[in-house]
Length: 265
Image (cartoon, rainbow, N blue to C red; front, side, top):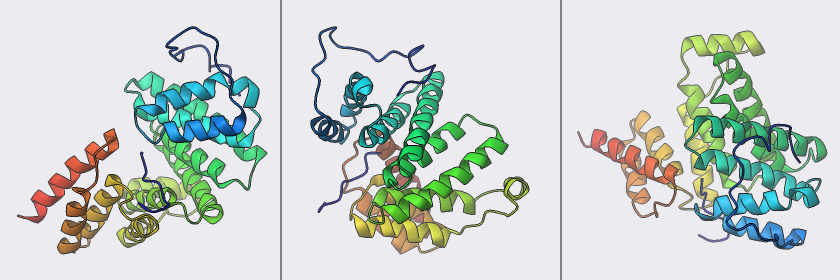
């Protein structure tokens, strides 16, 4: 995989009121210094099973490091991880809202830190899942704005191009009424094409070959939409060589089976 990593897909008033973090043992928490803590949480979240443990570790140290930027964006990211892991709608909403608040605070503290913008964009996307059309469009606008800032600050981060590809692909499929609503809110109709989406997914693959199952799935979808069936099949077949680790990986594999079946008709 070279030097790139494959994508594994401060308190607010509400933070302690519900969904307490489970503690395996009610023993004294070992306090780590900041550098050791950051290395440990980054390592843990490379596997799906380590993401909850990573979140707990950050929760254990939030009083000590809540004002440290490198801690702040990782804590916001961890709330995003918990959103992804949870299957309960109220829990998901809880994690998304707190994560967005934390990442917004991080941006205000460090406006030139690309990771703060990246996770603010992601968490706006998660919060939008629980909103009506108008707020969804508002959050979509914030998502794109902060994603573009993050790409300027972190131009070698494949995850950002994958996210921008997904944004472009979604916008290319918007209905007329959704585009009209966005134009009313922001004065212009959002526009993007499958070709733009494809360009971003290819960029993620260029920066990190074999980046992820979901990236291959979107590459296959784009090529299928453009009726370049050989290229679509190529990326479906490449995906079969990747390990299926996360829930998102499994969903991508299922989708690619459908794409392969439709292309072979």
